[in-house]
Image (tube, rainbow, N blue to C red; front, side, top):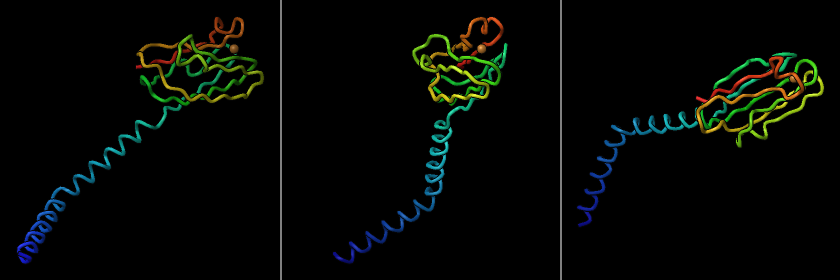
Length: 138
Ligand SMILES: [Cu+2]
C-alpha cells in the first residue's frame, strides 16, 4: 500500500514536471503580456498647450474616449484664461493666467463620447482673435 502511494506521487511529480516544462514558458509569457497591456492602458496621455496673443498652440489634439489626460497649459504672453466648452467631465478644467510664463497642469478623464470639444480663452475678444482650439475624442 505504502509502495503504491509512493509510485502514485512519483508519477504525478513526473507528469507535473512535464506539463510545466511544456507549457510553463507560455503561461509565463501570457502573464507578462497581460501586465504590459495594463501598463500601456494606465499611462496617461500627456498634452502641452501654449497660449499666445491671438493663438493657442497646438490648435488641436487627439485623445481616446475615457483616456486619462495630463494637460499642461502655459500662457506665454499677456493675460489669458483657459476653459473648455460646458461638459460635466471638463467643467473644472479652468485657469486664469495673470503673468506670462504661468503654467497650470490638469489631470482628467476624456469624455466617454466621441466628438470635438472646444477650448478657448475667455478674456474679451481673445477667442474671436483666434485663441481657441479643439480636443478631438476618437
Ligand atoms: Cu487670451
